[in-house]
Image (cartoon, rainbow, N blue to C red; front, top):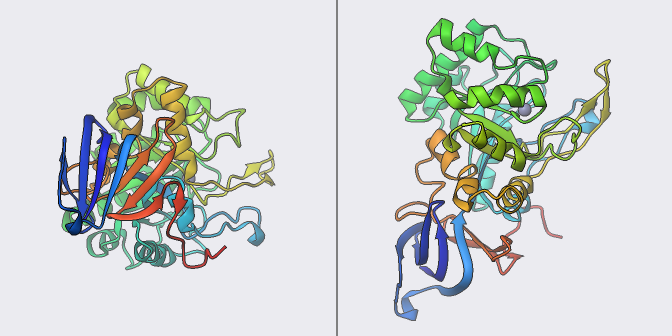
Length: 387
Ligand code: ZN
């Protein structure tokens, strides 16, 4: 058991000054004062002056690599454990992305297993940009119902020059298979939608919902801050259902992206409920810039750290309450994805704890009760991260 003393706890709701006891990978107790004999404790860490927040959930990461839009040499590498740890991220949700043609959902599944072996938590979405959607067992409903690691489908691309241009009927069928798979498997069955640059991008989702009587809450559109017109539409759509903001593509496209921290404040001011908004990194996704002929003219890659950075900016620059900002990458994501043991500091939940100093910089990080970062030093490295 590890005892953390004198923390200001944000669960993400503010709980005040508490001690936290962890054991067996779980949070065993949160109380004003916990006293236990040293001999039964593995470690006591005095955290006076620090705060505890839930380990961040980054729910849109191309963990097995992505990209390739500029040719084979532009394929991005897999996520490394250190990318998560120094970003305060203890849970990732992996997805395939643009390249559902030469990369596979099987490789995403194996990467989920690899990250779990390295001590963090991971799940995945089956499918890719393409329709028909690739799957492991031949049907996305089968994947979601029977493969523990698979919790939904996506990112299925719409309104993008790289999408398969699915019709409303095709998207409805995807949502239905995901929904039935989710019912059978006790999962969320969310359909993560890659929103592209085309105008009126939410129209297809409204059409699916109206024509086929499918709840908008089955969909989870991402990149909703990618340009001003999608962002304006998101202020309306977000009042009804979930919207995800992408952190890592800012500041690569500053001329049209809305800075995520600012986007959060503006959505809240527009009346979008905080619990409808999430923030993910899109890490390991390539950040291609195209010219008017569709030719790639620049290429970057995203990292999970962008979520932490934007949350800090939301708190410091945009003056959001700590608990509101944090909820976007903790409790909101856990609720939408039905990750019941994640996203909150509460008794019985997994001991994923991010300990911050008063400047909101990471001091310690626990994942499933194991200390991964101590006093800012990474104690654990990925299998091939020797240097
Ligand atoms: Zn995307």
